[in-house]
Image (cartoon, rainbow over all chains, first blue to last red; front, side, top):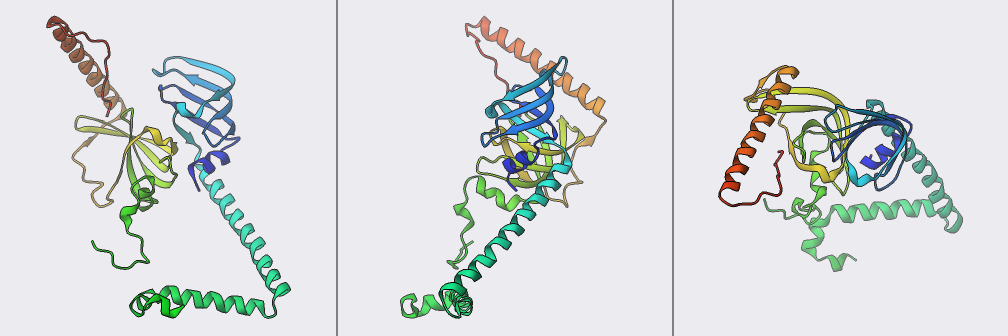
Length: 139
Length: 142
């Protein structure tokens, strides 16, 4: 999963954000976007030296100021799980649709489709032969 | 290496962040613009070279000493990355550095910073003496 997807799944989790200036923000992620802009709540801000601390009820960070984020280890597992779930759902929603289409509009469509695909696969795999024999001839 | 099979894309066409595909799930050293060195397993990246590192340690190196801090999962914003290097697992344990405690490394780092600052001051005053004006001080951290 992409870095920003992981950031999205971190919503509601505690995290540490270090800014380019060296300041750090410890808080719970409320929201984030594609530019890495963040809103955090229950934040402890620490200055670059680590000598002073400020408690902020909430804060907004413009993404470009971020150096890095540290998130809890569990978030990676959660993100992976979600990713897998999504893929499975996609597969489930894709398969019946294709079958339905073929059944509706062509007789024996499913078989035809299957064979067509197989043929395509063979052409692809035999690429070396085709080149020697001339690709145009085959088609 | 010559690549004669047109079905295989030659790897040289990936000249940007996409080169990182080879590094996924491998242990990497990442150096940041502020001089930090992170060692972790690359789990994912995007077109900005934003990185996700798992089981990361931060390694502080001063002269020939080093110390590691366990850090966990990082999302590094790509802009801050200076370099990414793969670590060979076989050679990982034979580095010519001595591991010391965190207290020791912090003390050594402070010494180095003080020393560098002192040298900078001396250099600047010398430069002033011979007629240069110094208006910015820029340090390479890495």
